[in-house]
Structures are given as structure tokens and as C-alpha cells.
Image 1 (cartoon, rainbow, N blue to C red):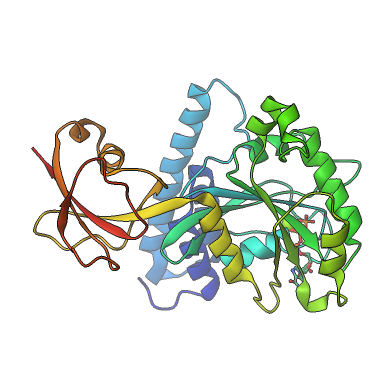
Image 2 (cartoon, rainbow, N blue to C red):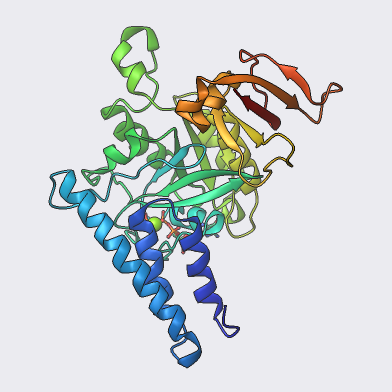
Length: 330
Ligand SMILES: Nc1nc2c(ncn2[C@@H]2O[C@H](COP(=O)(O)OP(=O)(O)OP(=O)(O)O)[C@@H](O)[C@H]2O)c(=O)[nH]1
Ligand SMILES: [Mg+2]
């Protein structure tokens, strides 16, 4: 890589590497091209970026044609990583700031409302687990973008962003009303409406701007909110609580990460496989290779907490987080 690349270019390059959709990759490449220093030493790199862009454009366009729709739905964010966390909140509440701090995505943070006009995904990490975090345009008591409900439907977790420095009750009420109107929150009386329970997504409150919140604001919010939410207090200015936020997302997603190992080789500790908790060795084999899974003969497992490292395990063995599994196919 040429040496004199700017921090802006490097940020765009990081964004490209962690982008989860072709559309996002394309946006990142555009940013790379915009920020790359234009001189002889970077001509090869510029050509490479343009090549990648035209290839991606072709694939995005053919995908759109196959789907039979004229415009790609910008509110549809394909899920990626261990799971998808979609933020929702009022204008200026601090949604984009959270995505900007935790991911490489290029989002618009601004001190004026309605700065974000479409959902933007990025990848955050809990330890070595990538989790998709999606910024969204704001809602108000009177208005919500019509496509937003599609973005929220695909979420594994909804993060309700509340700005602790302004009227918290109004914000939570607007969000609850909107989410309830689309049956996205667990109903107060779950027994009454089975369809609603099925449509509801797990949700928690991200209480942000803790650095400038009047004392006791979060307690007031907790006391007066009618739903039993979990609250995570954060500040993107001081980075308070951001580690708790990513850890809780990982825990609520309820996945285990497993490292695959080839016989006679070191395990691949770089890219764990993520499976729902309760998955077995057989599920892992299926996840890695559908056809080969039928030919699974045996498996061995290692775990930091286990004294029987490398012992053989049956295909019904339930995987635990951070387990290393060696699969033998016959
Ligand atoms: N003091 C403080 N300011 C914050 C914090 N988070 C965000 N802000 C500021 O709040 C303003 C709005 O932040 P954004 O992240 O753009 O808010 P948003 O919810 O994405 O806004 P919309 O796109 O309009 O919905 C910006 O001026 C941020 O710098 C925080 O934790 N503390
Ligand atoms: Mg925004």
C-alpha cells in the first residue's frame, strides 16, 4: 500500500473491509475514491477501486433486476454477522453517534435533527464476534419513514435510543407508540395476542448523553416507563457504557462461537462460526458444509475450561461458547 494515505482514506478502507452488503461496499469504495490522494503513486490503487466499483455495480444491478423491482429497497438491510441490532429514536437523540463510535460505517453525525435519511449498517465487535448495528432515520410523534418498519422487522434486537439531556418521557412514549402500532414490542399482556408475540422483537433502552444528563434523569425514566425494559446508560463523548452495550447485545443474541480445526492443523481462531445456543456438532458440520455433513464420522473438542482437551465427542454434543471443534469426515 502506498505510504502517504490519509486517515480519512484509511477509515474508508476499514469501512470497506467490514461492509456487510454490496451496497455498503459500493458506498465505502466511493468514499475511498473521494479521499485517496490523487497522484502517480496511487494510480494503480485508484484503478483497482474503480474496477471493484464497476463489478459491484453490475452485481447490485443484476440482483435488482432478478428481484423484479426497479429500485433497491434502502430500508431492507440484509442481516450479517452474529445478529442484527437496529436503533430507533427521535431526531438528534444520538443514534448515528453510537454507530460512528462502534463501527467503521460512514454515518452522518450532526448537531441538527434529521441528519440521517436512510438506514446504514455497520459492524461492531464484542471480543471477536461481529455484530451488525444499523443506524436509522428518526421518528417523531407525527412522522416515521414508511420503510422503517421493514428494517425493524428483520432486527434480532431493537435498541431504543433515548437522549437523557432532553424530555425523556416524550421520547420513550413516541417510540413505544410507534413500535406497538407495528406489533414490534412484546405486548403488555402476552397471553392475549399470539400473532403479536410472534412479531415482537427483543428490545432494550440505550440511554445516551449520560455526560450531560441532569442527575436522576435515568431513574425518572425507569420509574415512569410502563414497560419492563432493560436500560443501558452510555455516552459516546466519554465512551461510558459502550462495552456494556456490545456485551449485552452478544448475550441477548444467545449465540455460541466455535472455532473449527482441521485434523493435524492449528484451529482457525480468526473467524469463529456463530450458531444459536443449543446447537450441536452435527449442526456445526451442516453449517460448514451441507453435503459433507452427512459424512460426519467423529469429532474432537477442546475448551479452555475443560480438563479433557481433545476428547472425542458425539455428533449430539451441545456446543459451548469458545469451543474448538475438529470434525472428521469419512
Ligand atoms: N454530549 C453528548 N453529545 C452527544 C452524544 N451523542 C451524540 N451527541 C451529539 O448529539 C447530536 C446528535 O447526534 P446524532 O448521532 O447525529 O443524532 P441522531 O439520533 O443520529 O440524529 P438524526 O439523524 O437526526 O436522527 C450531535 O451533535 C452529537 O455530537 C453524547 O453521548 N454526549
Ligand atoms: Mg442520525
